[in-house]
Length: 251
Image (cartoon, rainbow, N blue to C red):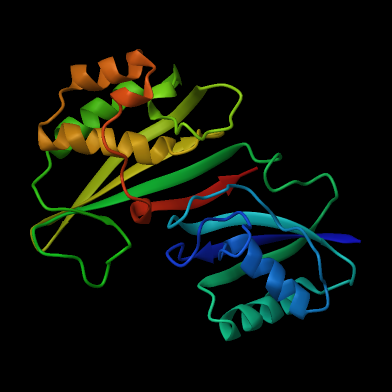
């Protein structure tokens, strides 16, 4: 057996998330089906992050143990060919061999996500299902100031899905930056965050709360109170999955 690591990009729209599910399309399932076509049946592809249904990835990392001694470039090309022929919206960007001690999930020291908001009245066309189309103007300065409240180590119970399986709600946000640029007078807002790990729905939950601040429905004090409440019912409506991207994983 030899272990291989992959750098993966995918459009999460067609999938019910990363993790394989019975009778439902998943990114993990698509990769394992492609490996089976290469004569590597029953192989378990381990990902660095279990992205939810509809969430995209620009830099997901995964590993797999294979029986045959593949050259990494040929393995990447063969997998991409089968993924393309099957109509999957998944691509292997890079492939390499790695030691048995490497684990895509447990060896990771950090993960970077970005949540994209486009603030305009007109519906999205080119970027439909690629960003959250918010139809009212947002106060980006207020969002940026409020984001600082969430930096560092906190009990993020308010921002945690009731289905979350993490042992503790305490997480540390190393960065939480709000970047904006204007395109034809329209604000494109990116909420960038890095942390060692996240709770289920954490980034989408905080994006929903920060959007409420940008609309003027919440103040900074409201956000601080929601964090302190440690109560899921105190969270604003969760942002939709299609605005979220797993950008990179660090080791």
